[in-house]
Image: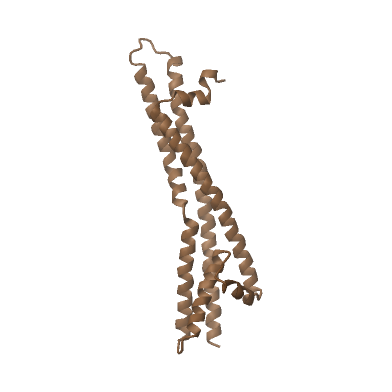
Length: 224
């Protein structure tokens, strides 16, 4: 069915009640914020993944001295390098202290890396709850606007002796736009949240493996 000029998308929005317009505006703002977060997180996680791959390749291929020089300048290009820097700085401090037990030194380095790991993961996970909220709440907000619009449409027909579909259809169509916008805001947010959560879990596992391998390497070194 083709929409007439009076039933175009913009006309339906313009003819909606102020409550429905407010719902639509809220959903559009939430959608714009979600897309901004999606693009920022997409590039950030891609950069972290590539940085972790480069760091691990350089670290395990014998580029330890180059990495130490780089992290000694207090500038890290990615989270995994930052985790290593915190462990290496802790190890450097412990070497200056006399009579430090090897097991205690390794445990201190592990704790330092673990603390930095938590801080870095908190940064990477920032704004994800907003995506989850938009994905779960937006359809209900849109549904509220739809219910309100349909309710107003039927209230306007209360004094009409004979009701036809042509009289009801415009009001219902205007109200359903709110549901459509709610779904438009929710679906990308849910997909992005699930994708980013999966990527962060894989990245966290990668950090865990590196910290354990580095701790084992230190333990072998201090027991030589």
